[in-house]
Image (tube, rainbow, N blue to C red; front, side, top):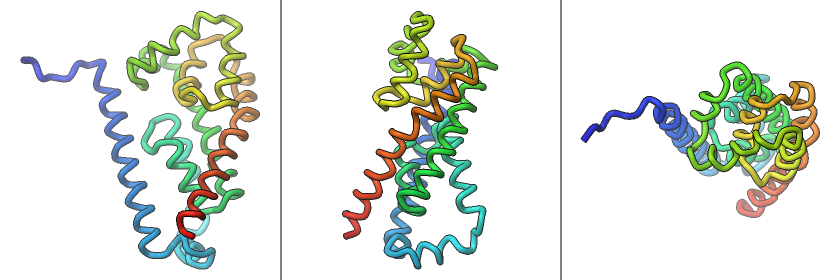
Length: 200
């Protein structure tokens, strides 16, 4: 039996591996924070972040942007960490900026490298389910906007998919900037309330 990995399967394998590693690292960080009381009060949080200075929010913003382009950390986990560390307002702002930057980045990469890249970043199931959206023509813009506003579809993949259409960068960016706040706010506020309840 040939055990060599098919060339077309390699990107998906490495992306899944990166996602798993990112999830484990984020879980380890949360466990560390809980065991050391980092999330217990504003004072302990400030003491933990103070040595990092301005780099702490900038690093997190960068991670949120990258996780859209490459799923190193699942989006929901990133949103949770943001609100845990910076609260519902600060976490929302950082989550929003990072995810919007990453979304535009995914769109531009797709527009540059085309369908082979888009096929490589998603499972075959997801790809087959949404590739038909390219046949919607101008209706794609409306479907895309609704999917971004109501997070019922894989937003990150749809940003890549949008890069294969005729939608302009200006229109795409407007949809992202106007559509993302609602879903990110729900994540941010909901996760903050849940974490606050867990810690009691």
